[in-house]
Image (cartoon, rainbow, N blue to C red; front, side):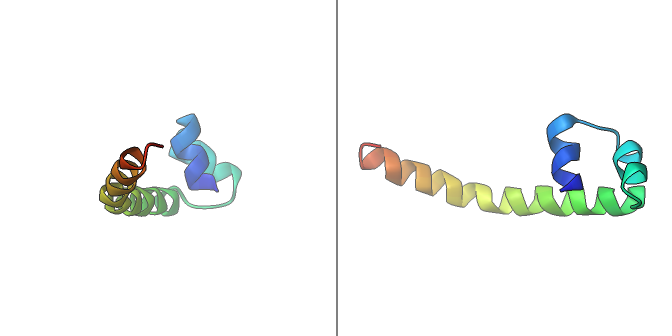
Length: 57
C-alpha cells in the first residue's frame, strides 16, 4: 500500500518510508518492481481494449 501511495500522491520516498517504519531502499525497490509488473501487463491491456472496442463496448 505504501508503494501505491508513493505513486498516487507523488510523496517523497523518505517521507513515506519513515512514517511507516520501512527503509527508503525497500520502498524504492518495491516501487520499481510494481512499475515493471505494470509495464509487463500493458500489452495485454492493449489487446483487451481492442477486443472490447471490436465488440462495440
